[in-house]
Length: 213
Image 1 (spheres, one colour):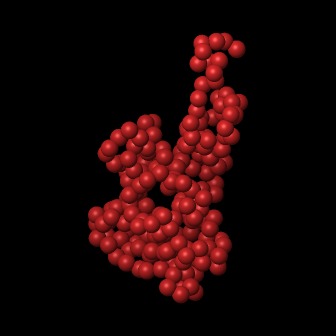
Image 2 (tube, one colour):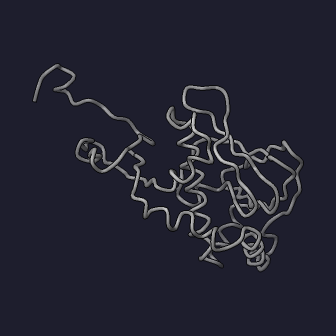
Image 3 (cartoon, one colour):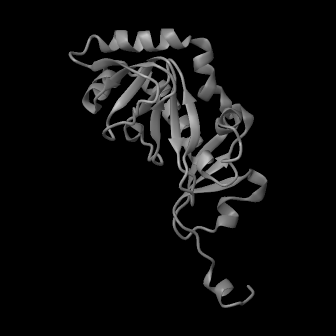
């Protein structure tokens, strides 16, 4: 079972600081410069407002070189989509599995005219093997997408604008709990707030029978 917990404020550091140190235009230009050393690493395309840019396969990786892309998710128990995150120049999306993330379903829609560099799974892996420093940054971006889509899919998060949730999302950290573990011990109240991300919980048999311990 996976839960997401609220961590201390020191957890913000690596999640958000990198993009304040490197301008977004420098970010994507540097990445593409590294990718140019790999034959046919990416395709560069332009798209008008409203274009559906959702990854065509789980391995597709897309880098925004200009414009904005809106990530949409459908909250649990709902049928209407809402904005999970507004991505801008230098942001990326897709290929979350390559960074060990099992992300909830989302759609990516051009929120303006956009320019996109699209990498296949093999090209992305070749790039990360050649330039390992990129893996940490792109993984941080993927983790933020995952957390924002999860939070906006929850009852508590759907009523809060996504821009207000982003600083909070940077405070979250994943935690895996083994089957059979006692939640009262694994997620003590004094440790923070916890949300069930994946898996199931069950009451102990003595509680189901109406017995006291």
